[in-house]
Image (cartoon, rainbow, N blue to C red):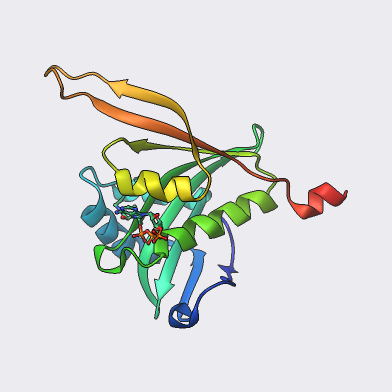
Length: 171
Ligand SMILES: CC(C)(COP(=O)(O)OP(=O)(O)OC[C@H]1O[C@@H](n2cnc3c(N)ncnc32)[C@H](O)[C@@H]1OP(=O)(O)O)[C@@H](O)C(=O)NCCC(=O)NCCS
């Protein structure tokens, strides 16, 4: 589990009461509420519990959790996968997801992770736009067949290559 509070440095005046920190089990009630409001197939408690070994960050606004991101890191492959990100519906469209992704990507650069991937359902246009904004590019398309014609589910696999951290570039 990632330890400590991650300071956000580029918040505007209205967002100064926000901070990103590592999740703990005490946060699960709120995280699971946001998850239920955000996904048709919400995660169960144990999925979140096992995610505590990953990069699992929550974004607080005035001490209330309004969003979270979970990213799994494979150090051997220098690769990470964003597994889940969601923002409470009342707080969407104000940069919360962007703040979570930016913080997570900064952490991955510090860990010398070279590549981040994620999958996103084609219908989630807003999420695709969000990832494109951070430079993610389409890497592959997965189509899950259905018994009913025209009811296939299409996922985009998106990939972002990260820069080397300054620390590593110097050494
Ligand atoms: C996708 C989600 C995480 C975005 O959270 P958010 O806090 O509203 O996103 P932000 O305000 O940080 O948006 C950042 C950028 O993403 C893009 N974006 C986000 N939501 C968008 C939408 N619905 N439509 C179009 N663009 C969108 C925009 O480019 C935006 O930048 P801009 O405000 O400068 O235009 C949120 O809508 C959510 O929780 N959805 C349900 C769960 C989900 O789909 N998770 C992703 C699964 S892959």
